[in-house]
Amino acid sequence: MSSWTRWHGPAMARLWGFCLLVVGFWRAALACPTSCKCTVSRIWCTNPSPGIVAFPRLDIDDSDPENITEIYIANQKRLEIINEDDVEDYMGLRNLTIVDSGLKFVAHRAFLRNTDLQHINFTRNKLTNLPRKHFRHLDLSELIVAGNPFTCSCEIMWIKTLQETKANPETQDLYCLNENSKNIPLMSLQIPHCGMPSASLAAPNLTVEEGKSVTLSCSVAGDPFPNLYWDVGNLVSKHMNETSHTKSILRITNISSDDSGKQISCVAENLVGEDQESVNLTVHFAPTITFLESPTSDHHWCIPFTVKGNPKPALQWFYNGAILNESKYICTKIHVTNHTEYHGCLQLDNPTHMNNGDYKLVAKNEYGKDEKQISAHFMGWPGASINYPDVIYEDDYGTAANDIGDTTNRSSEIPTTGIADKAGREHLSVYAVVVIASVVGFCLLVMLFLLKLARHSKFGMKGGARSLNPDPGTW
Image (cartoon, rainbow, N blue to C red; front, side, top):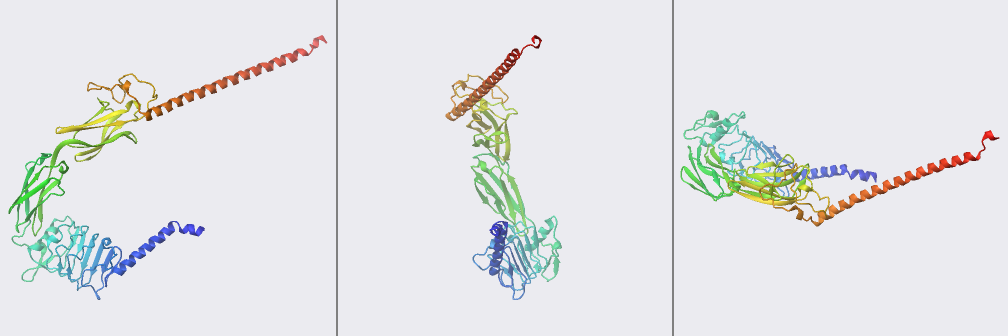
């Protein structure tokens, strides 16, 4: 029985983990192409005999190609092409290496779905051209292409530009073959009419009120002449553009407050590279209280709220219809700011029954205002049956009434059933303690009286006994 208990603990979990790992390796081995080795996260093909003639793909239907993060291929002279659908299943791919092989062509959309791809090594292959558009959507930290017979043309100038703009360029001996089949160092290559494009964005006023419209104008230039497009991200507002040869107009109508802070870019792109100019859209709008909830207790009591507005709204609290004068014991705290959204709470330090009541939040800026109200209960009244006079309290919480319409008659407030029951129970508890204390005190007094009476009785008996003995002097 003890051995079974031992195997039901961490040892059993480790055994199952080992079994799952073995099964994973076994499935990967079954799906692995000839001349390759595979694990659940890696494929490497280095055996030249018989070698591979196509990009390696896992064969069985229940394999998990999205878990592959690295593919290493070497010495595969018959591998010449990467087609558009060869790599699409490896969506988790981060490192791709194809070296000392026969790679000649990479399809335009080959890496369209491999957005995690960061390291590419195509050293010593047969590439004569490698257009920039294959990689423009990737955030590559490394691209190694040394040892390829590139043709000197404008289409490979982007590789030179990439090397020049890197903060820590890799040491690569990059060459291309000119029309005389002469090796030219890529870093010294000069090709006429082959330069970076430029974009110029005109945005006279990108601060606009919600519901209004705005117009942006962009001009581009370059040789080869660049393509022009707008990058508006996930803009919510309705927008459209009109593009001529060198200029484009973007119109945004019925602007939504949700678009405040979003970036709008005009992009010019050609074979050599791209240039863009960007502006941020600022939308002004009236405040909205999107969240207000009953108080919660943590280190302090907190009435949580969320307010949206631009410019930043001014916040004012009201307690039972009167302005709440904030102090060190009760104050507004903003905990998180998200551009035009503010998350915070009205913080109360040790509130009592005197702070029960209605709390209203008013948010206001130059474009309008919003208000919401909640009822807060912090502590029960000490006596449910007692009617409190119409008194204005001015304590450390700063909840004094002022001239802004405090019309609440506290003497007419009737506590809820739950509050009354709780107060009644507290009241009975106090009386019970008093009664018990009185009984105990009475019992102590009785005991003291009896002890004193017993002492006097004892002294009387001693005196009587002494009178029975004759005086020795009379004998």
